[in-house]
Structures are given as C-alpha cells and as structure tokens.
Amino acid sequence: KNYYWPGVQEPSSAEEIAALAPALRELGFERVLYGSDYPVFDPREHLRFLAERCGLRTDELERLRLQRCSALARLRPTD
Image (cartoon, rainbow, N blue to C red; front, top):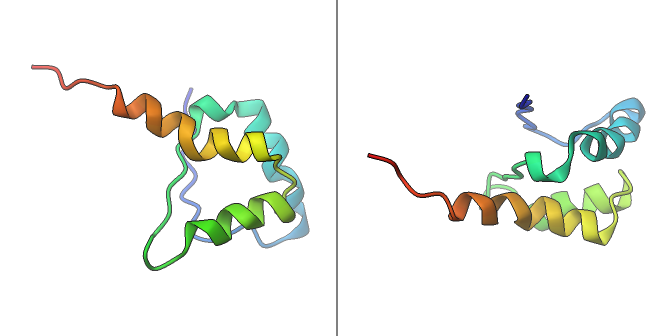
C-alpha cells in the first residue's frame, strides 16, 4: 500500500523529526518519491536537513534521491 505525505515543509516537532527516518526505513525507500518545490526551495537544503536532523545515512539519501526517479524513468506509456 502506498502512502502520500504532502511534505509542504520539513517536520518541525522533535517527535516528527525522530519518527521520520525510522518511518522511511520501515516503508522502504523504493516506495518513496522525493520531490521539491525547486526553484522556490533548494532540495539540497532539505536533503541536508534529512541527514543532519533526521539521521539519514548517505546511502539512504542517495536511494531517496535517485532510486524511485530511475524506476519511473523506465516506465513506458500504454495504449
């Protein structure tokens, strides 16, 4: 089952920050599509936040940033 979280902003409470990385790990990064409001917001700042405040590792950030987009790029339209 998919879950949609319209992360309009970064998690703000200590509880949200503490819960985000474990929730992403449990859900599985292959099921997460990361997006941003670039150029309004810089995605590098959000990724830095996820690393520094939420505790995502470098390999997890790469999976979050690239894995799902790569999978979507391989989709072919159907008639």
